[in-house]
Length: 266
Image (cartoon, rainbow, N blue to C red; front, side, top):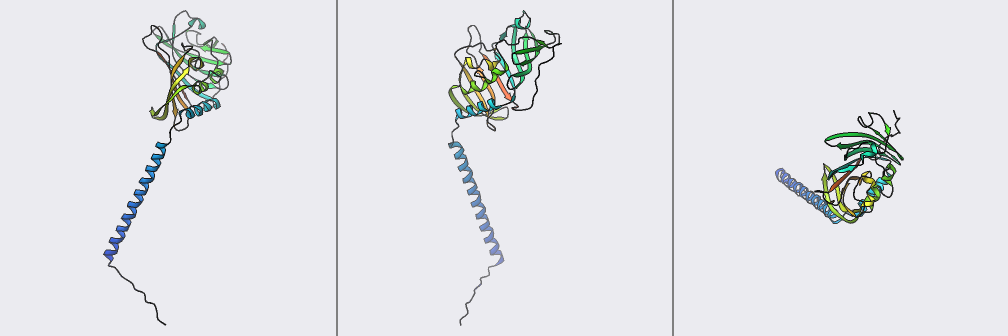
């Protein structure tokens, strides 16, 4: 019986080491190439997937509808927004500047309002529950809570009705996706369009001067969670005004726990 022979080739140690290094280097290069190709594919896939602006708007609107609470900041710039000071017992002309507060569904709102009385800037504390409105201010109410009308055409519940924030953005027309932007360090989708002035009255707590026609609107929706971060409304230039009034509405801290109660009048 013939035995099979085994042949062994022994390479010099230095040559083996060089060959191993060569194959390891080739393997590493191959892995890097594959990783780069995979990254390019993912990038191309992201670039190939268009952003649907209307879908972003609808999702953001639904999240507002579903929110039990949220904080909001309302700011007016440009041509001053004049208030009917007679509603709170003053004869002087007041200008609205800024409001910051908390909305608790379905019909509660509490916060502070910054107003300008000639050259003096002051703050009002407000609590609105249902159809009742309460104000507290050192001069107007001597630092005590009193039931007074702050905005005769506004109730907190209107923030979620057909004139509320969600329906306002949902009804936008001429929708245009502007692109991804960085909003004070926050990645957002920027969407532009127009909205019927009649649908944003409650969004501005009843203070917007334009009652009909379209208003230019800019939405900023968070990339991370699809929540509305900011809504900017630019009113048409009024006759005799040098610049338009611009409203900026910011929403944050959705669904946190807040309590708002009717204050005791003193």
